[in-house]
Length: 269
Image (tube, helix red, strand yellow):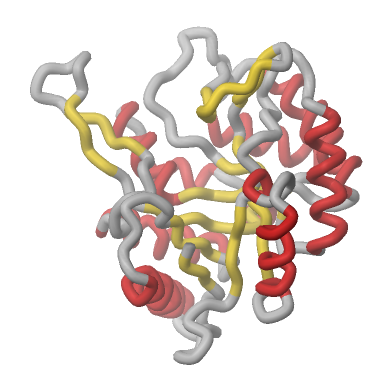
């Protein structure tokens, strides 16, 4: 439970910001003496068709061994191809070939880290016509085959359903509760949809307060999954820390109401 003095219970960082910066690494290790730290990767590219960057994975494994974080997680996406790295998290078709690739890569990541890896559902803006599996089914199968756990991002679930015409509540209900190891909450931005006159698309910007429908979905998720470590993502257009801590406190309160008693551990980032 967060106290007034500490404001948050744990923090989450992108390891790629620290791997080549010794001074930042020293500061992070000092922070880890006071707070539990979770690691959220953005560069592993488990969905790539051309194999993981094994040197990056080795560096990440050394970093994780040194830091001993609370959790290690990353995205169901690809961001590299044949040694070329792209500054984005790109989607993949949900079919059996993609499933084979992601399962092999998650196994490789977990073997290198010597611990469970949590896989996050993406923010989606399109569907592949070749997909033969739903996203929740795809994630469930990965968890079953690899023993990994899942990071359920409620902001991503909401905006993906809004963008593609799905039902975020049915999506949450389709995920295996026992596999959920962490929850994310983040703000999004509505932008004009150039493909649909008068329409809009929701973009996962992490640049605003969490929307009311996402809070409602979070309450539903906590009631279904039970208390889980919850991250408030706010890493663009940052307000002062008190504003972010207030979002974390609200997450505590919403979780407590959903559970009927107790509090969920949260962090503002």
